[in-house]
Image (cartoon, rainbow, N blue to C red; front, side):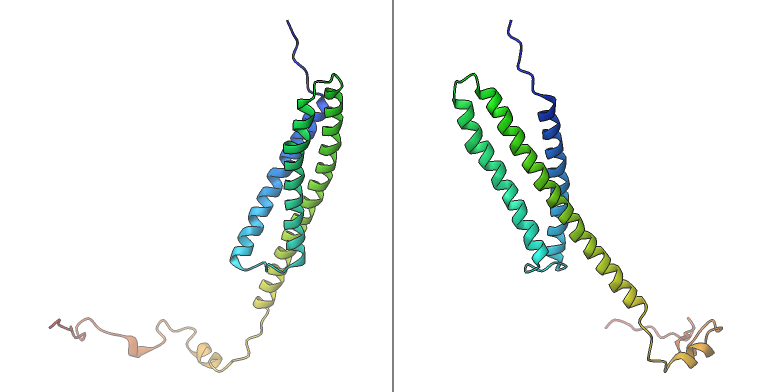
Length: 165
């Protein structure tokens, strides 16, 4: 009976980390896409372009490894292939994890900057001084009254019904 090959624990942990980073980055990219569609991000924003290009780079790295490098190692029948493939995967995974961490940090920083700029905008809107004070005396006079304009009173007896012709 043949025992199955066991995957080294370091490779399993690398795969888990890559999956987690990819999920978080996908959520961040979805948020950025919504902001872009709403007009909060312009297509010429340097940071946004950097994020998109880095994401494209990760996708190319993944496709290149899975579609080009991996099949070449799997097609060889050497006993050394497992060790070489394992080492190659560890190097690739390490590079990818570092790059994904950087992309995640850039995405979160960009989103945080957008949040901070929105907060500043909201504060400035709230802090706008009202310069038109023409109606303030009127508002002070009618503050305690239950009805401001008496001409809007309409008794049900006096109301004229408009008949449809």
